[in-house]
Length: 234
Image (cartoon, rainbow, N blue to C red):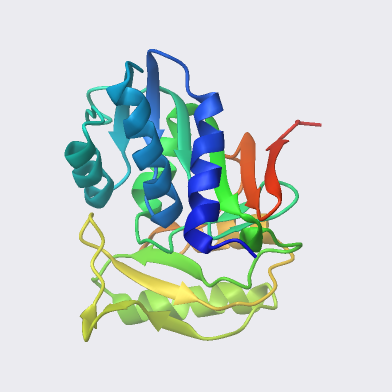
Protein backbone atom coordinates (compact mmCIF):
# COMPACT_ATOMS: atom_id res chain seq x y z
CA UNK A 1 0.00 0.00 0.00
CA UNK A 2 1.38 3.38 -0.99
CA UNK A 3 2.34 5.83 1.70
CA UNK A 4 -0.56 8.15 2.61
CA UNK A 5 1.44 11.29 1.83
CA UNK A 6 2.38 9.90 -1.58
CA UNK A 7 -1.28 9.17 -2.37
CA UNK A 8 -2.25 12.72 -1.42
CA UNK A 9 0.43 14.14 -3.69
CA UNK A 10 -0.71 11.81 -6.47
CA UNK A 11 -4.30 13.05 -6.12
CA UNK A 12 -3.14 16.66 -6.01
CA UNK A 13 -1.08 16.31 -9.18
CA UNK A 14 -3.94 14.62 -11.01
CA UNK A 15 -6.31 17.43 -9.99
CA UNK A 16 -4.09 19.93 -11.79
CA UNK A 17 -5.60 18.67 -15.05
CA UNK A 18 -8.80 20.54 -14.10
CA UNK A 19 -7.00 23.86 -13.59
CA UNK A 20 -6.84 26.18 -16.58
CA UNK A 21 -4.86 29.35 -17.07
CA UNK A 22 -6.70 32.40 -15.74
CA UNK A 23 -9.03 30.45 -13.46
CA UNK A 24 -10.67 31.81 -10.34
CA UNK A 25 -9.89 28.94 -7.97
CA UNK A 26 -11.25 27.97 -4.56
CA UNK A 27 -8.50 26.28 -2.56
CA UNK A 28 -9.41 23.81 0.16
CA UNK A 29 -8.16 23.00 3.63
CA UNK A 30 -6.62 19.86 5.09
CA UNK A 31 -3.69 17.58 4.40
CA UNK A 32 -4.80 16.50 0.93
CA UNK A 33 -5.61 20.08 -0.06
CA UNK A 34 -2.18 21.13 1.19
CA UNK A 35 -0.58 18.53 -1.09
CA UNK A 36 -2.51 20.08 -3.96
CA UNK A 37 -1.37 23.59 -2.98
CA UNK A 38 2.27 22.49 -3.13
CA UNK A 39 1.96 21.08 -6.66
CA UNK A 40 -0.14 24.08 -7.71
CA UNK A 41 2.63 26.37 -6.48
CA UNK A 42 5.10 24.55 -8.74
CA UNK A 43 2.89 25.36 -11.74
CA UNK A 44 2.47 28.97 -10.66
CA UNK A 45 6.24 29.44 -10.53
CA UNK A 46 6.48 28.14 -14.10
CA UNK A 47 3.84 30.52 -15.44
CA UNK A 48 0.35 29.23 -14.61
CA UNK A 49 -1.92 32.20 -13.88
CA UNK A 50 -4.67 31.64 -11.33
CA UNK A 51 -6.28 33.71 -8.61
CA UNK A 52 -7.20 31.75 -5.50
CA UNK A 53 -9.64 32.07 -2.63
CA UNK A 54 -8.54 30.23 0.52
CA UNK A 55 -11.00 28.32 2.68
CA UNK A 56 -9.06 28.89 5.92
CA UNK A 57 -6.40 31.02 7.51
CA UNK A 58 -4.07 28.01 7.38
CA UNK A 59 -4.55 27.64 3.64
CA UNK A 60 -4.07 31.37 3.11
CA UNK A 61 -0.79 31.25 5.03
CA UNK A 62 0.51 28.28 3.02
CA UNK A 63 -0.45 29.95 -0.25
CA UNK A 64 1.39 33.07 0.86
CA UNK A 65 4.50 31.08 1.74
CA UNK A 66 4.50 29.29 -1.62
CA UNK A 67 3.64 32.25 -3.83
CA UNK A 68 0.11 31.21 -4.82
CA UNK A 69 -1.85 34.45 -5.35
CA UNK A 70 -5.03 34.76 -3.31
CA UNK A 71 -7.78 37.31 -2.74
CA UNK A 72 -10.83 37.28 -0.49
CA UNK A 73 -14.16 35.83 -1.56
CA UNK A 74 -15.67 39.31 -1.26
CA UNK A 75 -13.12 40.54 -3.79
CA UNK A 76 -13.90 37.61 -6.11
CA UNK A 77 -17.33 36.21 -5.15
CA UNK A 78 -17.80 33.94 -8.17
CA UNK A 79 -15.35 31.12 -8.81
CA UNK A 80 -14.74 28.75 -11.70
CA UNK A 81 -13.58 25.79 -9.66
CA UNK A 82 -12.88 24.65 -6.11
CA UNK A 83 -10.46 21.83 -5.37
CA UNK A 84 -10.73 20.39 -1.86
CA UNK A 85 -10.39 17.16 0.07
CA UNK A 86 -13.01 15.10 1.88
CA UNK A 87 -13.20 12.89 4.93
CA UNK A 88 -15.69 10.60 3.19
CA UNK A 89 -17.19 10.33 -0.30
CA UNK A 90 -19.90 7.94 -1.43
CA UNK A 91 -20.88 6.73 -4.90
CA UNK A 92 -23.36 9.60 -5.28
CA UNK A 93 -20.66 12.22 -4.64
CA UNK A 94 -22.03 13.06 -1.20
CA UNK A 95 -19.31 14.07 1.22
CA UNK A 96 -18.45 14.45 4.86
CA UNK A 97 -16.01 17.34 5.32
CA UNK A 98 -14.75 19.37 8.22
CA UNK A 99 -12.11 17.19 9.79
CA UNK A 100 -9.76 20.15 9.43
CA UNK A 101 -12.27 22.48 11.08
CA UNK A 102 -12.95 24.69 8.03
CA UNK A 103 -16.34 23.33 6.97
CA UNK A 104 -18.24 26.64 6.99
CA UNK A 105 -15.77 28.47 4.78
CA UNK A 106 -15.30 25.38 2.63
CA UNK A 107 -19.04 25.18 1.99
CA UNK A 108 -19.37 28.89 1.24
CA UNK A 109 -16.50 28.70 -1.25
CA UNK A 110 -17.86 25.51 -2.83
CA UNK A 111 -21.28 27.12 -3.24
CA UNK A 112 -19.66 30.11 -4.97
CA UNK A 113 -17.96 27.81 -7.50
CA UNK A 114 -19.24 26.54 -10.82
CA UNK A 115 -17.58 23.16 -10.14
CA UNK A 116 -16.01 21.35 -7.21
CA UNK A 117 -13.36 18.67 -7.63
CA UNK A 118 -12.81 16.42 -4.61
CA UNK A 119 -9.35 14.94 -4.11
CA UNK A 120 -8.90 11.96 -1.82
CA UNK A 121 -7.23 8.61 -1.40
CA UNK A 122 -9.24 5.42 -1.76
CA UNK A 123 -9.65 4.99 2.02
CA UNK A 124 -12.13 7.91 1.96
CA UNK A 125 -14.54 6.07 -0.36
CA UNK A 126 -17.54 4.57 1.45
CA UNK A 127 -20.78 2.85 0.55
CA UNK A 128 -22.77 4.88 3.08
CA UNK A 129 -21.68 8.06 4.86
CA UNK A 130 -21.17 8.07 8.61
CA UNK A 131 -18.11 6.11 9.68
CA UNK A 132 -16.37 9.48 9.99
CA UNK A 133 -18.04 11.72 12.61
CA UNK A 134 -20.12 14.57 11.16
CA UNK A 135 -18.59 17.90 12.20
CA UNK A 136 -21.22 20.43 13.28
CA UNK A 137 -20.14 24.05 13.68
CA UNK A 138 -22.13 25.70 16.45
CA UNK A 139 -22.44 29.02 18.23
CA UNK A 140 -20.96 29.12 21.71
CA UNK A 141 -24.08 30.79 23.12
CA UNK A 142 -26.65 28.24 24.27
CA UNK A 143 -24.33 25.35 23.60
CA UNK A 144 -26.18 22.87 25.81
CA UNK A 145 -29.53 23.74 24.25
CA UNK A 146 -28.02 23.34 20.78
CA UNK A 147 -26.55 19.98 21.78
CA UNK A 148 -29.97 18.79 22.97
CA UNK A 149 -31.56 20.01 19.73
CA UNK A 150 -29.03 18.10 17.66
CA UNK A 151 -29.55 14.98 19.73
CA UNK A 152 -33.34 15.14 19.32
CA UNK A 153 -33.09 15.82 15.59
CA UNK A 154 -30.84 12.78 15.15
CA UNK A 155 -33.07 10.56 17.26
CA UNK A 156 -36.09 11.42 15.09
CA UNK A 157 -34.14 9.92 12.19
CA UNK A 158 -33.17 6.83 14.17
CA UNK A 159 -29.59 8.00 14.71
CA UNK A 160 -27.67 7.79 17.96
CA UNK A 161 -24.04 7.82 19.00
CA UNK A 162 -21.67 10.04 20.86
CA UNK A 163 -21.59 13.79 20.21
CA UNK A 164 -18.41 15.35 21.54
CA UNK A 165 -16.86 18.79 21.71
CA UNK A 166 -13.78 19.07 19.52
CA UNK A 167 -10.72 20.06 21.49
CA UNK A 168 -7.37 21.63 20.69
CA UNK A 169 -5.28 20.21 23.49
CA UNK A 170 -7.19 20.81 26.70
CA UNK A 171 -9.22 23.73 25.31
CA UNK A 172 -12.19 23.81 22.92
CA UNK A 173 -11.25 24.04 19.25
CA UNK A 174 -12.23 27.44 17.87
CA UNK A 175 -12.91 27.80 14.15
CA UNK A 176 -11.67 30.67 12.02
CA UNK A 177 -15.15 32.10 12.46
CA UNK A 178 -15.02 32.02 16.26
CA UNK A 179 -17.37 29.04 16.63
CA UNK A 180 -17.14 25.61 18.26
CA UNK A 181 -17.38 22.18 16.64
CA UNK A 182 -19.37 19.20 17.85
CA UNK A 183 -18.34 15.89 16.25
CA UNK A 184 -21.32 13.57 15.91
CA UNK A 185 -20.51 9.86 15.64
CA UNK A 186 -23.85 8.77 14.22
CA UNK A 187 -22.49 5.75 12.40
CA UNK A 188 -24.26 4.75 9.18
CA UNK A 189 -26.40 7.63 7.83
CA UNK A 190 -28.99 6.19 5.41
CA UNK A 191 -30.87 9.52 5.04
CA UNK A 192 -28.15 12.12 4.61
CA UNK A 193 -30.46 14.72 3.02
CA UNK A 194 -32.97 14.41 5.86
CA UNK A 195 -30.20 14.75 8.44
CA UNK A 196 -28.85 17.82 6.66
CA UNK A 197 -32.24 19.52 6.80
CA UNK A 198 -32.80 18.50 10.42
CA UNK A 199 -29.45 19.90 11.54
CA UNK A 200 -29.99 23.18 9.70
CA UNK A 201 -33.31 23.56 11.53
CA UNK A 202 -31.63 23.53 14.98
CA UNK A 203 -31.05 27.09 16.26
CA UNK A 204 -27.39 27.43 17.20
CA UNK A 205 -26.15 25.21 14.37
CA UNK A 206 -24.13 27.42 12.05
CA UNK A 207 -23.26 24.75 9.48
CA UNK A 208 -22.54 21.03 9.22
CA UNK A 209 -20.10 18.86 7.32
CA UNK A 210 -22.55 17.06 5.04
CA UNK A 211 -21.76 18.32 1.52
CA UNK A 212 -24.51 16.72 -0.52
CA UNK A 213 -24.84 18.61 -3.81
CA UNK A 214 -21.47 20.19 -4.34
CA UNK A 215 -18.97 17.79 -5.92
CA UNK A 216 -18.92 17.63 -9.71
CA UNK A 217 -15.84 15.43 -10.01
CA UNK A 218 -13.59 13.30 -7.82
CA UNK A 219 -9.94 12.35 -8.11
CA UNK A 220 -9.27 9.17 -6.13
CA UNK A 221 -5.65 8.10 -5.63
CA UNK A 222 -4.89 4.41 -5.21
CA UNK A 223 -1.62 2.54 -4.88
CA UNK A 224 -1.94 1.37 -8.48
CA UNK A 225 -3.04 4.65 -10.06
CA UNK A 226 -5.59 7.46 -10.05
CA UNK A 227 -9.30 7.17 -10.79
CA UNK A 228 -11.18 10.23 -12.03
CA UNK A 229 -14.93 10.15 -11.50
CA UNK A 230 -17.50 12.54 -12.97
CA UNK A 231 -20.84 13.28 -11.37
CA UNK A 232 -23.42 13.00 -14.12
CA UNK A 233 -26.84 14.38 -13.10
CA UNK A 234 -29.77 12.11 -13.90
